[in-house]
Amino acid sequence: MAAAAGAGGGFLAGRLTAPGPPIDTDHAAEIDVTIVCQTVTSPCNVTFLVDGNAKWTLLGGCQTAPCSLQPIPTAHRWTGPACNSFLVEARSALTDNETVALCEGNAIAVSLLAAGPAGPRSMGVSISRSADGTNWTLVMATVPAGLTTSDTVLAIYDTGGATAMPAEAFATLSYSQDGVFYGTNDSDGILDVAEYLLLSTSRYPTGYRVTIADSQGLLFAGTLM
Ligand SMILES: [Ca+2]
Image (cartoon, rainbow, N blue to C red):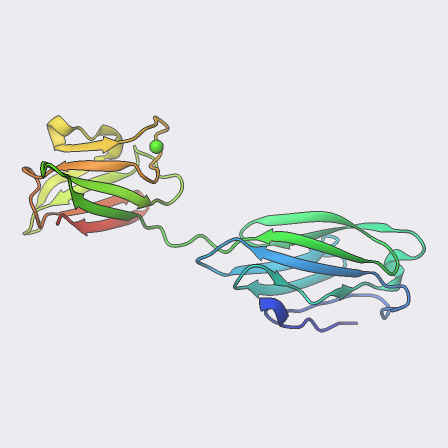
């Protein structure tokens, strides 16, 4: 048999399959599921499983958090006179699960976390001139997770597009040699929000362009101004 899953609560129409005899509403238990989508920038595509896919599978999308599934009534044979335990699981960009005890006539509430796919790989960088005018200050406002200072490179181009500083890893930037200082409060080898670059304004005047990239591609491009 199959029961229909509604589209309420932000959960898109899904497919619910419940093998076995018809639900005996006198003895059924009920699972009330809330999926909490943690991703702000992309929707959570969730597969909800009960008992490792042996019982029910429900597919759906969750645009905003939280979203609730339609209450899921269980078949009578699941519970009987005793309580039985089942694994409920939400699979998305992450997997969350919980073991619930279903007892005849009882409703059980479950809240599971989900996440959407990772957003585009890009850095947000603010560019300003330092108070004394000697440096450009490039502060990292948003940074993809796990960028290493050895794999992430800075390059600088003049107003005509010619290379002013060839691509150089953050880890080896030197103010004396490159006219660029990489400012960090830690030594973890990872780019973090609020870490910054200082670029000499005498070497790199207004209108020069900077790019930040790693081995997977371009992360940021901006103009010194
Ligand atoms: Ca760091």
